[in-house]
Length: 138
Image 1 (cartoon, rainbow, N blue to C red):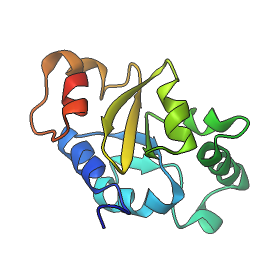
Image 2: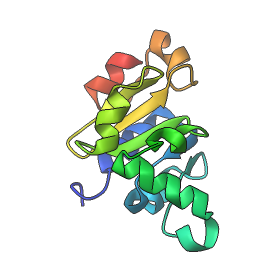
Image 3: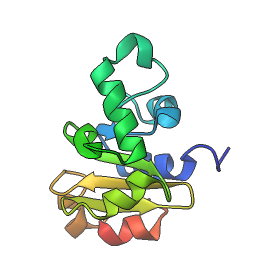
Image 4: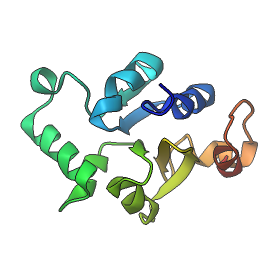
């Protein structure tokens, strides 16, 4: 299961007390809701046909593929969790207003610069996070 789902990334976010709106790959939406909801709201999950508009579904497809207007899905988001080495992983690393806060072989997590998850804790330090990349940014 650790290779299919973002187990370690979700555990680190849970330990950090993360809250907000998060862009996630479709396949991870329900997993994230189960472990981080209701404090973290996801961009899409398995209820896509019944809960999400066609615009949201199209934004998800563009984000996952890295196509034209790929970053439209980020507008309402505070966080983004992406599959490592995917098109959005590469594109997110180049976005000046987003900070990589966690990565492992399965997932990378980015936070919008200036969000509560980044700014206050960057100077205070934070105990309990298990990833050195995450710890170094807090």
